[in-house]
Image (cartoon, rainbow, N blue to C red):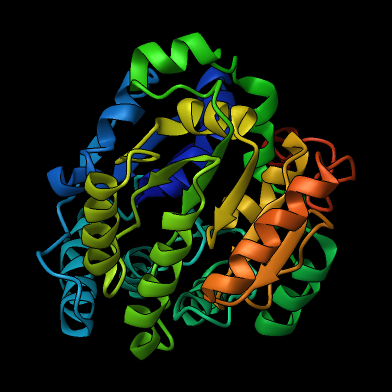
Length: 367
């Protein structure tokens, strides 16, 4: 079986990784990776290099990113991605038995949309989820409609996919694929993290990733002000900030965090840890603060509490380790104080379903 895999960013690759390893190791499959989006952007760290360093051959590299992060830039990037992929699918539509697509990014939506007239058989991972504070919610459901096979992270999401596509055929609840990374990775020690990234995780550390809110765009400047003011006052922690992704107004957050790093000795910004480095950072940190899906999905399995700020992840199902607060300096500081009192999370993760990789492989083999 020829398996194509669409990957547009560090985020989806990090989730795909255990499945790609399993597909590559199985002689039943032929794996071909199709990279595009920020993977090929120097501004975002050329993250395609991480895929190749993991030993994968990236056969296709399709440049689709344009400069800027305004609404017009995002829409133009979507249009460019569709044009590039219309040519790609025309030339390669018979090369793949199944093409995997993941998540809810506008780049992924554009690549999948271009494949609809060519009747590409898409298999969608992480459908049925809900993020009311991001336009990604629209893209996710649209990708589900364009796909014929579905691998969801929990039963409630499975049921939502069934409602969207109006059939339960080929809809499977396999659990969250990214959790398989936690078993597959050998995590770096604090000494290794210090040597590789020049960050001392022996210090009490808050791991932070904050992306723009893309529904209520007018709130972003105030959100930046509130979170930066809070960070300035959290002096008993080292704050490690991973840079935001390529969303509308992401550059504003990026510039604010880099300025904050210059101003405050306890703040460190990093472009990209890579999957192994990121989960190692999560393992060593005290807790997470931000609005990224890794806080919702993976953090509970690493016994970490999460302060989820704002509305970007609003609507997602969460384990009991996640606390929701608005972008409000005072409330953020209060929640940090509360987590200091309760200590380490010792509950379960609702997204773990016994290993998603093996389930997906079995289903693909049986198609």
